[in-house]
Amino acid sequence: MSDDPLPFGSLERLHSERSSALESLSTLDLLRELSARFSGGEAFPKTEEAFAVGKLLQDSLVSLIDVHNNRFSRQRLWDYYYAYLRPHSTTRPPIRGTTWVEIGSGSQNPAAFLFLILMLGAQRCIAVDPDPIQNPPMAWKALADMAGILLVDPKSVLELEECDPHDMLRNIASFDLAKLRAGNGEGIDSSRFTYLQETVESLSLPDETADVVISNAFLEHVEDLETVARQLFRITRPGGLGIHGIDGKDHRVYSDSSVSPLAFLELAESKPIVEGCNRIRPFAMHVPFVQAGFELVEKEIFERIEVTDQIRERFVDPFRTMPQEELEVLSGMIVIRKPVLDSGHNQ
Image (cartoon, rainbow, N blue to C red; front, side):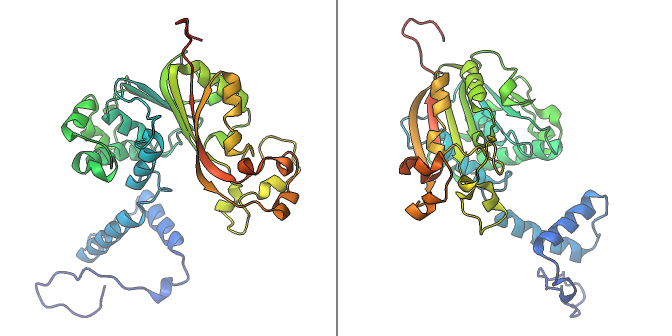
């Protein structure tokens, strides 16, 4: 705030100025410091200037952090909507009255997309992740915030849907949004949403539980994909879909931009996980699922890279001799279906 004196009765001016004393600190360091202070119990300054600066920061952050990598953002929901509800696709999954399972849901905001599915009429949703929810009050509050967005401005997320906010509100009438808004998990209807802290390799779900199973950037972190494929086949109902987004990049690129997205294909390693990933190429990821009994319905490319002969020569086998169309896909999606037997008997 400016040091210029204000006329008596004037309100604080809503602007802020940079401080030369803090120039050496990165924005991330400043954010960490603020978060640590307030989460550690430090009181917020009770002055109009502090409240004015706080409001400016709040409004700036709302737009700045509305990005896919923020697991609490509207943009991430919008991206999930296009990826998994597939509004342009003939393989659009069923919603009303169905059960959805998300594997590798993450431990920060594991219910976000599934709560949207419940608002659209699903009967039950189950999130599965090996880690406990990191901050349950924050995760529950996020559901109420998301409900507010969808009820006030549904087109900001469900762009191509015919949405009735009153219908969506009725679909989650068994949830207490006021309690969720306060970060209270008692607002969850546990008969309709469940968080399972367990590995996908040893799922406790009964056979033929799910109509739809989804995952986002999870399968590439699995060591024993054959076991996971068999488990997902077991819990999927005949005719049920699996929709899986796959990130086939060397994950070192997320901390070091100088690393090539396919650099880990140059490493001579016998273990299945290399630099955090299993190295199975996105367009070959369906193979263990087909072996488990699924049928491949669709493959979709999200991102690809040119692989020249010079780049290929640096790869180790089997990647050096892999078909070009498999090597070049960095990320994509597979859609699989559990067949329905003509005899009427479930597999």
